[in-house]
Image 1 (cartoon, rainbow, N blue to C red):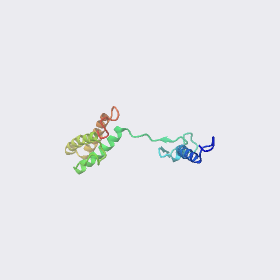
Image 2 (image 1 turned 45 degrees about the vertical axis):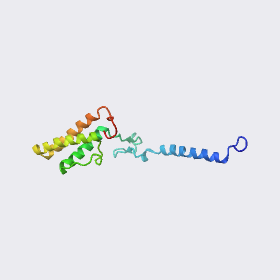
Image 3 (image 1 turned 90 degrees about the vertical axis):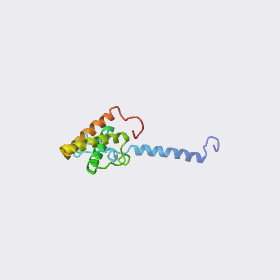
Image 4 (image 1 turned 60 degrees about the horizontal axis):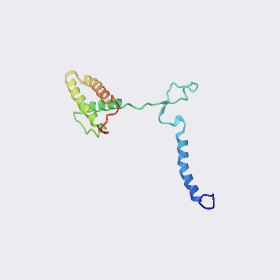
Length: 146
């Protein structure tokens, strides 16, 4: 402290330096919903409707739905190219890659017997069923690549 009861000039700057980021955060976090990337608007909202000011938040994709989309996508790629890639370069976990291999094996049989359209339907069904089973209790434990 400088004189009795008066803080040093450097202490004031320190307090200001700590308070300023907190102030900026609170004002930035309270920005209008129209600027929030987590909101979507619909074309049917009219300016006079009571819900037009209420933003609709997009919901996060469930782990099972994300798994289904990834596995189905890569299963179609593998079925068309007949070549597997590295599971990490595909963005899959080891467990998702195991699902992919099972789905592709079944899809190859279906493609030979019933054609490509039947194989792609089978991919969708089996990827969905296996991913829902895998994530039935939430995210599997055992590390991020399990």
